Image (cartoon, rainbow, N blue to C red; front, top):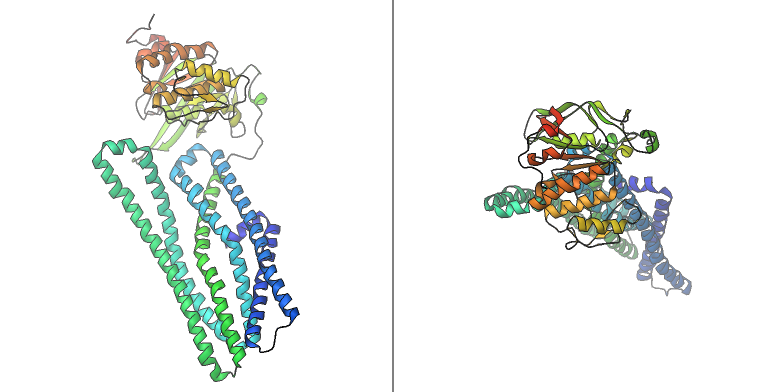
Length: 556
């Protein structure tokens, strides 16, 4: 079973220690059963030594069970922790294009539902080991009492296991289909939260979303889960019925061909009744184990998928080796760069490029073009979030590769149109950081909306325009050499839009920063040093922006 191999691979010694204590606890259970059955079937008085031995077993059983469960729980929690961190690091190291192909719903489902299923099942493993030990011990004790009774019991167990496994395999198929539908349900949940405003404002769309997508998937998931549970319940009920049939056979059929004494008959019946609980517990926990196995397989498949796309294991190139001097870079080039991807709801692929561009420190460059022309994809190529399928990205003549891409990306501060705003300033350790943050809050007119203290913003629940200003503040604090803004001004009011174009961008340029801006605001094109225009993935113009007509002049 994958779950056992998972724990064994993590720490074989700790796993073996837990199993050992579980076996001791199970053996103590059997010892107590032997003394109880003897006390019930013997007429003579129990000796003091036997009483003390029984009390010793009473003390040994809970202690060993506690040790077994705590050791295995410790191992399980560490294993889950390592699995979570490994998967998170794989996601962070995997290429952006591959993550976009996998999709957020599948990633969320794996990080939440699958990991929780595995963690829950691991919590049950100590109970399964202890009860399995009790089952084996009961069988051995029953065989010592009467081989014929043991043979009958084993025949019933074979029938029970085969019938149970038949139902179990069918249930597992339902669980696998249920797990696939869980990905779809997570996708609908995300649509419901991200598109809440659009759903609220359009009643027809809202009702169609609920009835055609959300309700349909939820009903299918409910049906699959009910089918899986019904099969497990039927298997458990059938197993319980087999036990009572077995007791009837032992009491009424076995004496026909085996002259058992009354004490042995009583003891055999007690053992079978005692066997019912640990065997039922073990069988009832199997659904959790099978669900965890399905989840672990999904996690492994996702991990393998991420590993195949992970960058090479060669050591990264240090920053001093990538840059020509300690004074920073001099020239950033895209040489014959292309990138191909499939657009949604279209059969044909879209190719950006070939693109040949060059950027210098202290440039202010505007990038424009229609929707779907490839502007955002171009930015992802410039920042090496997408590595080109052909052509090269070069910094001071050195080709950007998986070995030095992290150092290269360290030159950029980016605010994408679909940016994420963190409530905490992460990864920035610079002197007077708090003072600078407070200064930028005032400069961006956010001092009355947001408080900053000890690296944390008091809130990010702001309008989209204000959230973009807060993202810009973070970019200011990073203080990197290249700034990129993807439609940053689209959500700003007219007053702050002028501040952005006439004050903030020129100020960054004056500090020697290279600034690339995706924009449709042609009235401000004149302030740029250069205008790059894309159309259907092709670079159709890269010109001096001063030659571009201006609708409204700069304010005095």
